[in-house]
Image (cartoon, rainbow, N blue to C red):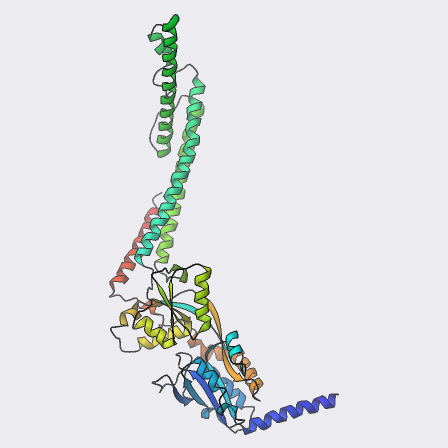
Length: 475
């Protein structure tokens, strides 16, 4: 059994080496997408160049991987002779990999671009297989509002203050509804026939003023008037008790009640008032601080309303589906504007200003910002570029993969070498770190100082910070 197994393995390796020895051509199909893949001499979307001339993250990984693969093969083909063909779309790459050129035994074809690994592509191109993912991209927002609108900040402050004020009023009313009857009862019940502080005159004196008890109808009338008079006095004393309780709670100065129990309500009212003011001050300070921070940060997808439009690229199903799913799950009201291609999406945002938000892969967004910053400024999109900024939040994870026909004799070898390259920390640190760092491609650093909108947002943020400091130190 061991001899038979060994002969099969040796035969399989020999067959691979025979096919590999006959290979004399390498074709890389890619997309023009800075900073992932590009031919420096390319002007149009479709163009060709050698792998040695190609630039970008994907091309660096491809060179390193093929260099390791070719070390295991006879010198029939050199990596410098590998050809890179920039195509118009991912669909074109899938069709090219199934063409007659790629079916030849002396040719190895690989689709290396910003190709997301999705189940739809696996089902659509069953003859192709993804190599191991070499980079995981993050979906981020590119928005023309590097800071939230001033109107949103003001309306948010008003709503927050309204809720704080409503809470204070409701708590105070509930507390006073408990304290007023207690103060009144303690004062009235404690003194009995004595004159309480809330009663301006004593019932006994009123009775003596009219001559005491009288017989007959006069006495009955007197008792009736006395009962009504007593009721009025009780209501009046309750009103005076309410005025005293409310005044002490608000910080006014009043004489102390005669009842020790009623007098004991005075420090309770004072402490509760101080507690309410302390909580209100802390809440207002927190609100100002929160809005001061939010005025200096980029908005999130949940911050956009029906007045906002998000552009997506229909060719990128992962990103488009994420935006549609997030809108449905969170019941958001912004408009989605699907574009035919990636470049069409950027033109709709920068040139035509059909939308004010883009959701796409972070590296591709940075590449477009950097490309336009290096160009001659144009009136139709220069101000939009200066006002644009990348969102701070990474919303989705999108693994990139490379396509290859799994029936090719070198498929397993290429996949293994690609795994080794992805695990090579020294290579990642020295060569690939430039594509991951936060560089000046983030347009939020060029907020458009000449724009009135910038100074409006800056003023709102400064006022919010100042008010938070003043309110926080007032108590």
